[in-house]
Each structure stands twice: as structure tokens, then as C-alpha cells.
Length: 222
Image 1: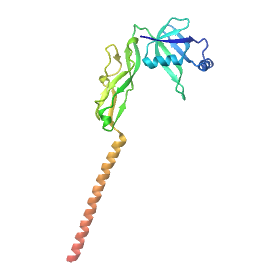
Image 2 (image 1 turned 135 degrees about the horizontal axis):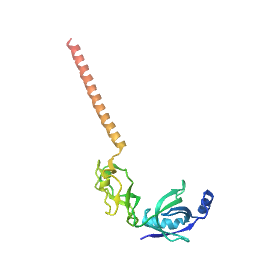
Image 3 (image 1 turned 180 degrees about the vertical axis):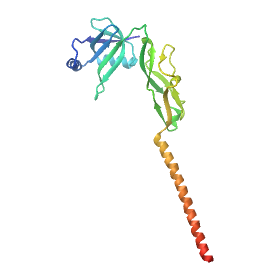
Image 4 (image 1 turned 30 degrees about the horizontal axis):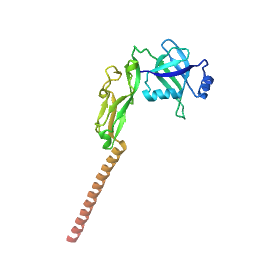
């Protein structure tokens, strides 16, 4: 099911025009259509509600004034450098009968066994590229990590997706690994080296003491 997003066609473009759009509380946007490109603006709250409910790969019915509805997905966005808001959005019109290539977030579920033993999870791939029909785009890909032990690695082949969704990665690509934190490893090594040094020092001290005793004994006999 598509979500409906309303938009207003922008007759003027450029920096001055886009600043005016933002002053009016809307986000300037561009549609990269199947046959044309259009500049328009959208209400940030309307867009936020859709993406919150359906995720950033939601299939959207874009309702532009004076135009028929277009089936679109979010292509990319630009964020404000200091404030938590978007300043520009691009949409891509899609043909629902043809596959599209999109990026989908990998969502980790649970706490790994390795973490419970003091390990650190290193997520190499936070998102994956997939190909499927627009209606089959997953909101995210869930990956259960609760059974992952220290030193273990999960690969793309460990992901589970519907048959309608094709993963565009090699099966042996690493998704994540669980290992001891480097700092802890270094501390352990330093402690071991220190302990060895203390043992050697103690041995040397005993040897010197024994040597002194032998010297004293030799002097008495003489």
C-alpha cells in the first residue's frame, strides 16, 4: 500500500526561490520522473509521518497539483549542518512493474554472546543493496546476533530475505564481527610482559644473593 504525499509545483528555482520555500516552512524537492523532471515543495510533517511509519524506502503516491499521482521513492536528501531537519529532497519516479535497486538498512537484533563476554561488535555493512519490485522493498533487514561468539563473523550469506528480493552483494562479504576491544588486548599483553619482567627480576635477585653467600663462605674457609 502506497502512502500519499502532497506537493506544490515550484515555478521558480534557484537559491533565492528555495530559500523562500524554506521560509514558508516547506522543503524544496525535485522529482526525477520517468519522462520528465519537476521542481516542487512538500510539507515536512507530511513526509516525516510517511517515513516514520513505512521507512525511507516507502513507496509513495506523490500528489502534485495539476498532475496525476506519481509512484515515487526517496532518492536522496540533504540535511541542515546544524539543525535536525532536511533542507532538500529528491524523489525517483518508479514503474511498479519493473525492479529497482535500493539501499536497505541492516538492523541488528539482540545482544551477542561475545558482547556479554566483553567483546565489541564491529558492523562493517550498515546497509545492503538489493533489487526488487517497488512494492517488495523491505523497510529494513533484520539480523539476529544473539548467538554470535567472540571471534565469530557473520556474512551476507547469513541474511534472510524473501525470494522476491535479490541481494546485490557477494555471499562472503562480511556484515559484522565480534572481537575483544583493542585496548583490552593491549592491556592484557602489557600485564603479561610486566609479570614476566617481575619474575626475571626476582630470579636475578635470588641468584645475586646466592652468589654473595658463596663469596662469604669462601672467605671464612680461607
